[in-house]
Image (cartoon, rainbow, N blue to C red; front, side, top):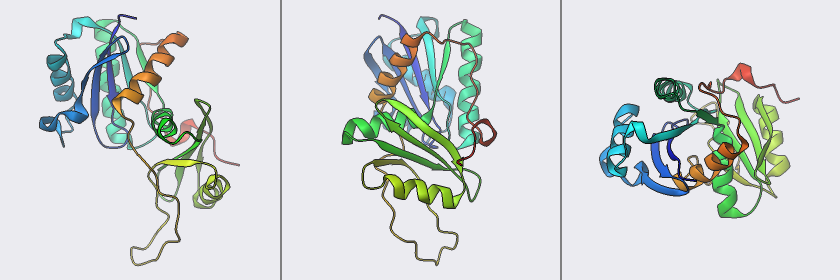
Length: 217
């Protein structure tokens, strides 16, 4: 595969951008200290292309993290991906953030991964990444989230971010610690290329929102 692809990840609130040529990662913004802390998607993309010796005209596909996570940051990045894809008439493929962090942590730990991130208080997004598939993807209240975690805590690793404390002075009972809340760009590229091979291409994607997934029952 000789396609040049752009990879955009931002649902954790930490912007990261990659450029790849086929299976080879040409640029990873996580290793560029000059970009650290910036929230400017365009700045990241310009730096990524410049450091990869590529131009927008070279891009064959855009992969973007669609959440769940920080909705403002995710919407901004998705909007940028959609606009660029539309302008260049190239596919834009959205990838669920739990597939990204699930694959990343699962590859490290060699076990199923419970993915969890906060939604509108006091609710959470939940998912189980196992066998390279995301299952049980849900929007849950605190009680359901706690039950879900306890059900898997002895058999799974954890990814994402969560806290059930409602008062800063309150002592919280011990919960499993997430190993990562961001996927490496190498993990992102692996998941992205598998998505591309499925052939379900579009030129517009949408971020995950609370209303787009069903509640845990």
